[in-house]
Image (cartoon, rainbow, N blue to C red; front, side, top):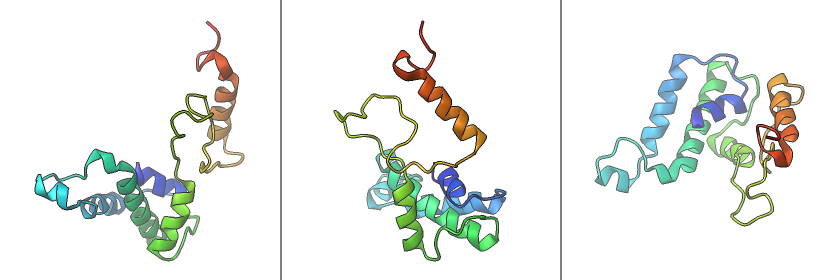
Length: 137
């Protein structure tokens, strides 16, 4: 998830193989003492948001350095991290009004105006309404 999030955040024009290596290195750097104690080569799945953020930050910075980013997200890791945190989707709190409701945008969703795929998905979700994703049966 972090690789695609980072690529979308900086609107990369291409995905060079080197960015896959950057993502893999960011995953490895996300290993903590507990992961190492059990000799895991990937971080615990319960840390997916944290690890995805680490990967996205690394990918954005590398894409900018390599000249494949069309949007400059930030100059330093801390700045990029702040921007990405604001854009990262967060599940609604259990029991909130949003819980279980079909939605197109979360509070941090980054919409691409005029983008045909974004608008098609929005139209489908709006059209689904209370009937669900497949319409009335």
